[in-house]
Image (cartoon, rainbow, N blue to C red; front, side, top):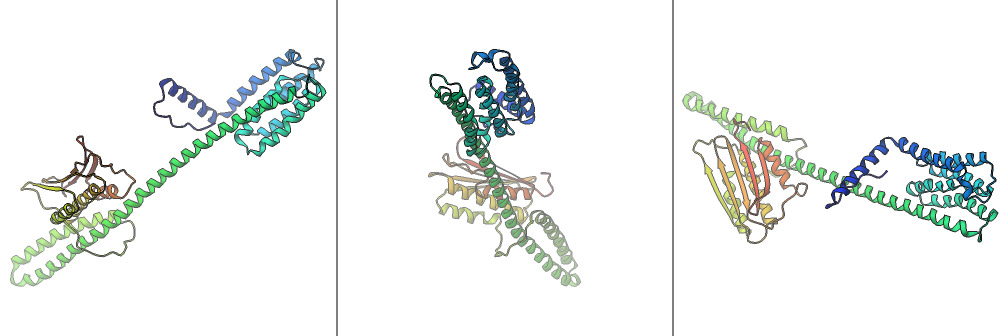
Length: 413
C-alpha cells in the first residue's frame, strides 16, 4: 500500500473525506495484511466454486469435462490468491498450470482471468524483467486452448486476452511510478529537514564559541582589575585603612560579577576554543559608532535611549549581547530592506530589565527565515545566555521588528 500523500491546497470537503477514509483503509491493511488477503481469497474462491456448479459450461468448448476436475481447477485458480502479494510470481506459475489444463481440456474456466491479480502485483513490486517471465507463463495456456479448440480464427482468444493482461500490467506500472514518486518526495522532505536541523545546530555551535571567546576577554579583564585592586589594597592597608576597605569592597563586587560571567561561560562553552584575535569587546558606549557606520552605508537610523534614574548599570556581558543584537538587526536591514527604508533603535533601561527594540520601515523586505544564515540563531543564543527573550516578526504597518528583553541580575526572568 502506498503512503498517504499531503493533500493539495484547495481540495474539496468530500474529496478530503475520501482521502482520509482511504488513508485509514491503507493503514489498517498495512497493520493487518492477512485480513484483506483472506477476504479477497474467500470472495474469489466462492465465485469460482459457484461457477464450477455449472456456469462454466456457458463458455466451455467441451461441456463434458468431469465435475471433479472443474472443482479442483477452480480451487487451484482461487486459493493461491492469498499469497499473491508476497509471492506473486509463484502464484502466477501455479495458476498458469491450472489454466493450461483448463484450456487444454476445453473447460475454459472463467477463473483463469484471476491471473490478472498476481500479474498486477508483479508489475507493482517486481523488476520489469519479471513481466517477461509472466508472459512466458501466460502465453502457453492461451495458445494451447486456441489450437485445440479454435474459434473462427485461432487468435480470437489469444489477442484480446493478451491485451487485457497488458492493460493490467500497465496499471501496476502506473501505480508503482506514483508510489516511487511519492516516496521520493517524502525522502527529499526528510533530507531537507535534516539539513536544516544540522545548519541550525552548526550555527548555534559557532555562535556559542564566539560568545565564549568574548566572555573570556570580559572575565579576563575583571580578573585583571581584581589583581590590581588587591595589590593596591595591600600597599594601602598600612597607610590608609579606609582606602584598603574601599579596595576590598571593589574586589568583592568585581569578583562576584566575574563569577556570574564565568557561570554563563561554562554553560555556553561546549567545543574547544579556537585561537582568535583578542580585541576589546564593544559595549553600549560603542553603539553611536556602530550606528554612524550604518548611516554611512546608506541606512538612516535613529537611536533613542530611555533611562530610569534608579536603573543600575549593566554588566559588560549584557552590554555586549545588546550590542550584537542591534548590530545583527541593522545588518539584516541593510541586506534585505528595499530603498527608502529607515531604522529605529530604542533602548529602555528599568530597574527590572533592559529592552532593545530595532524596527525598520522596509515593507518589501523578505523576512529572514530560521535555518537560513546564522543571524536569528545567534541572537537567540545570546538572549538565552542572560535568561532573556528575543522576538522577531513583521509589523502591522509594514517593516520588521526585533525585540530583545534582558532581565537584571537579581530580577526573575
